Structures are given as C-alpha cells and as structure tokens.
Amino acid sequence: MEICIHDLWNEYELIDCGNGRKLERFGEITLIRPEITATDKPHLPNAEWQEMANAEFVETSKNSGRWDIFKQIPNTWQMTYNSPSGIRLTAELSQTTSKHIGIFPEQIINWQFIERESANFGHESFLNLFGYTGLSTVFASNFFDKATHIDSIRKMVEWTRRNAEYSGRSNIRLITEDAQKFVEREIKRGNTYDGIILDPPAIGSGAKNEKWIFNEMIENLLINVNQIAKRKSFIIMNLYTHSVFGMDIRELLHKCFPNHNIEMCEEVKSTSTYEGTISHGMFIWMKRI
Ligand SMILES: C[S@@+](CC[C@H](N)C(=O)[O-])C[C@H]1O[C@@H](n2cnc3c(N)ncnc32)[C@H](O)[C@@H]1O
Image (cartoon, rainbow, N blue to C red; front, side, top):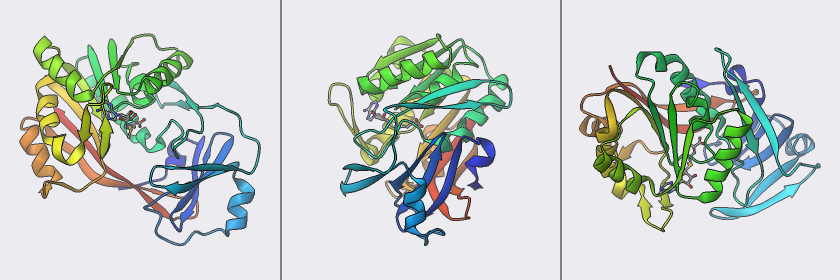
C-alpha cells in the first residue's frame, strides 16, 4: 500500500528521498535524515536539500551520529494533528542523539484505524507496548476510559507525559517497564484490553536491562498478548520484517491470534512530493468481533 502522509496531515511532508536519505518537513522545521529504504535517486539536487533543511543527521556509525545545523532550530517544537472527527493531538519534537525526533508520522494510518474502529469495540481499556513518545497512546486515550503506556526508557515515558498534557489528556497510565514482563504480570492479574498496539524493535532492553531480541522472543510475546486481548478486541502491530523463524508473518499471526481476523498485513510505503518512495515496514491490523 502506498500513502502520501501529506494528504492526510498537512503539517508533515516527505519532500524528497533517495541515495539513502530523506528530506522531510515537520511543521516549521525541515530535516535531512538517513533512510535505508530510499534506494532511488533524489529528484532535487543536494544544494537544494541543504537550502531547505534546518539540519541534517549524519550517521557516523550504526545508531549514532551528529546533527549538522544549517539554520536555527529550537530545542523543541510542536506539531498538531486534527483528526477527521475533531480529536486534537499535539506532539513535542526535538533532535535526539539518534536520528529520531519523537514522531513516526506514518503512524497516522494506525490512528485513523483506531478512530474508525473503536466504536465497534468496548471502551474500557487500551494498551501501547514499546510505546516510545506515546502519540498513539495519547490519540487512543480519546476513545477509551483508560490508556496504558509501556516503555522501558523513563525519558520516553516523561516525553509521553508532556504529549498527553499538551493534548489535554489525563486518563493515561504511564509505566516504565519491560513490555514482556508487563504482559506476563497482566496475565496473572487477569487484566484485559479492548485494543492493543505494539511496535517491537529488532533489539531492545527492558527497564532493568531485560533483553529483547525480536527474532527470538516475538512469538512468545504475541501468544501472551493474545491472552490479555478481550474476547472482542483489535490488535495493531508494526513489524519491520516479512518473516520470523522463516515463518511467513501471516502464519505467525494465525498461530498466535487464532481468533482474530487479519484486516491488513502488508508493507506500507510513503510517496514523496516528487514521487520517490520509502518503506515503513509491515502494518498489521487484526479484529475479533
Ligand atoms: C520503534 S519505537 C516505537 C515507536 C512508536 N510506535 C511510535 O510511533 O511512536 C520502540 C520503543 O520500544 C522501547 N523498548 C525497547 N525495548 C523495550 C522493552 N523490552 N520493553 C519496553 N519497551 C522497550 C524503546 O524505548 C522505544 O521507545
């Protein structure tokens, strides 16, 4: 599936991409960042990219690098998303020591799924595992009595607290914990959720340094997630691979969620203003009605 995020959210624009980089506008600020899936040639010359951009993240090794600043850039700035039904989500953005800035704009299609589908499910509880800066948690909190946000890094949980405040939400439970441990505890406590979203990284670590290795642990986590999903529930997941243990993703989903229907399980790509494309990996939407 190909999307143009700018058509859904005019504050964001993938202006151009290619040669392993992307040029994006986030509200008032334009950035150049590495993008492994930008394999085509860019449309605009490099000089024009630099003219437009406030800064570029230059990778010096895997997962680290530096920001080269071309134009003044505030320490933090905001973007606001107004959804079709009038939900207002305010995101705080800032340059971090990695190339990430607190937002994955492609998540907008997950927010639209939540907005569209939540009326078909119970309204009690929503859970975000590996929740990062919490934009999906904050957005979903508009449709549920309580939204629970799990991330292993305290700084991310604090960032989520600020995003919730800017967006006027106060029904969010913020927990700094290992996602797997949290789910195991919820099984023991008998707590269940109407909607669950998860974006497990390839490698991570829990709040007490518990290791997370996607390829080794995803099946067990998903089996456990199924146990805390209510009888009637939806699951949203982002994956960056097409197969796990050589198993097709659909096979894994059928094994771990035997009672949910797969509404979407496909790679989502973004098109730039100049019609280049980058990939956002697999988007998965499942429902049990
Ligand atoms: C790829 S990001 C998720 C992005 C999010 N879906 C969004 O759109 O904003 C992965 C997050 O998982 C967290 N994380 C990594 N290992 C974890 C673990 N074992 N338990 C909980 N969170 C973990 C990281 O701190 C990071 O914030």
